[in-house]
Image (cartoon, rainbow, N blue to C red; front, side):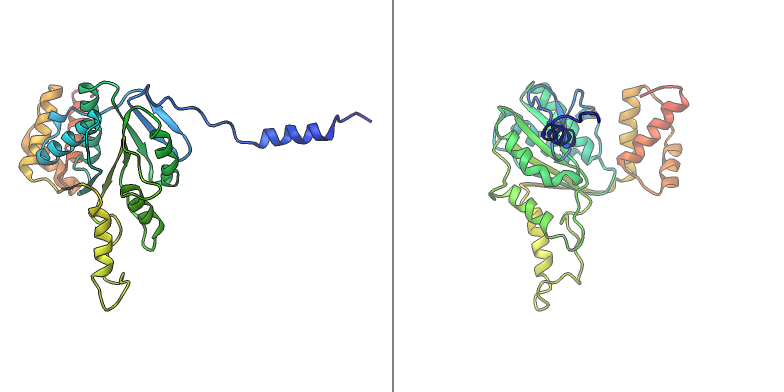
Length: 275
């Protein structure tokens, strides 16, 4: 019979094979951006974003977000941010562009950490790590929304924003984009007390009110839509016809920054260009 070796050694080897690989160490000082998976961070070597001056039709929002991110990069008091409203109006692009501008003004002082909505359970661990680093961070959650009946997610978010045991450290601020200001659904049927039908709505809005900076983004006008296209075309040396641009938006049933960018991408393709 073939000797199978020490049974304890075989068991130890089997357990070692079953064990998850060691968590990779993150160099939180080396990269401009990271993606948080829920258990570890994946570095992003290059942050892609348009220049702030290329973002049109959102001038008031752009000024306030860029200023707030710059304060964070400088280590000054800064707000947690909620950007809410119409799809495709530049909420995500503005966040990335503001970080990129702050990094150029203050190299190495700030990084963006994007966390997917499926990685929220690990946010507290992320905060613990970031709190030990001599650098400022903007933790960014894109398109956040909680399902009806989800009380745990909103409760965690409140705790992160205001003083709970899991609150984010002083060198970290949260930035969230959402299609609705209240983040969580608001329906007349959602009443904690039927004698006070506004209670549930007020509680949902109280979550949004915990963000020091809350900015709405609304569908753009025809003039804004054309101005967005003109800015991109000037940047890339492309020509466009207004009537053709408007027909593009009509076929898609929307005027937005995203629709404008898709049209510019179409123009570049027609011209044999890559942008």
